[in-house]
Length: 178
Image (cartoon, rainbow, N blue to C red; front, side, top):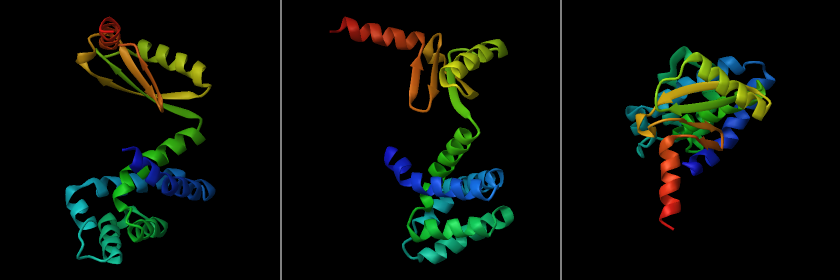
């Protein structure tokens, strides 16, 4: 997974810088997200991996499948990625593009996985606490994982805060086994 992110990073950075410099970040966000969804389809993966097709044919088929949802610059990106054999990286490119967008807008994207659904007040307390820690606004997405038994796991970029009961029990079991 990290190899994919590493390979996708220069393309995502270049796409974001182009979009930012041309004041089309929002439009490009939608285009790249559309391209990523298309690239993730099993049928499109078969086209991308088809050794009987030239890189130009793959790019043309991919761009045609995108239809009017992308502009000429988006088509150029598709051709560049196809020429370099990187079309399959579009999901990672899209994720990194959104990360760069959030950073530019002063946002930190945070994923909170809790054992039970959280109410708005709990989400607000977590967001306020993380805003103080990062010095930026926080965009929270939540998930439920009953196997945590209680508490929550918070992920923000490389930072992971495991405040779950399962995490505490795992740490205790590790300490006792030594």
